[in-house]
Length: 390
Image (cartoon, rainbow, N blue to C red; front, side, top):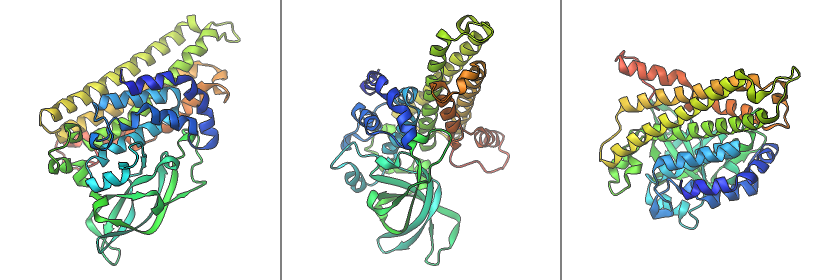
């Protein structure tokens, strides 16, 4: 067990206690943020040159699951914010120095949706746009945003030139009142926006070149960790948060079963229907985690051997990853339905875990349709374009 994971387990009581407060405040509490930073988990994929650990990605994914087990919104932030140092490690060293030079625990937000428009100017771009879903943004000093480069008149090329733009906190605005949701409310995933913020060229990378691993090819002195697939690494960070929430939901159900007796006198812990549902859910969760860890290690070992993960492997991984997480969600749903009417009360953790789990299930990385069809179209060479994010 990595020390970062151990520290989270040691802080389980505090994380559970603060979790409802995260939801009530619409962002993490200061105590929760302190636990995450002191554990060192956000630095697990960060470059050693800038204060990180460059650990096996499975260590990071276990840390994310563990945080989410005790505090769903904190676990979601752990995955989203914690995966960003992996990409930053592939960017210009000048930018890495700006972000981590004075404090290696600085957090970077996102999102990557290409909703911004960047007009070329001397030395960089004037960047304008508004983005929803900037997870954990209140505690982040930098942000990575997706955008499209235009010409001087604002026209977009075909195909569009999609890039990732990195900006410091002073160059964008967090829009209050833009995160009103049924689940994961503690993530504070608010909108961010700016108008004509200048982004120098060295703080910009090509989205497609990042996805295709070309930035690692340019930096052969980097750790093989950074030869991993961008799509697989980011998607697994999301899935890890989701599976961690499922773990917390099953923990809450187990505790509930210990004392639950229905109005009909059925003792939950000896009810064969509830026993069966819990057994299936536990098995599905264990299988999902194991499947994803095996896949991640397979890709990591290829990177260590100097080989590259192929597009076919990336698509197969995404097929298996979304199947694993959706199977777990279905199993938790079955358990929830058997929990009785008491499970819908907001003063019980099971209700909150269920809401947060379904909020997480809506993330594009957990949606199966494009993952399945992209795999099938590539497998059968149908000629239908494959989603390039996979």
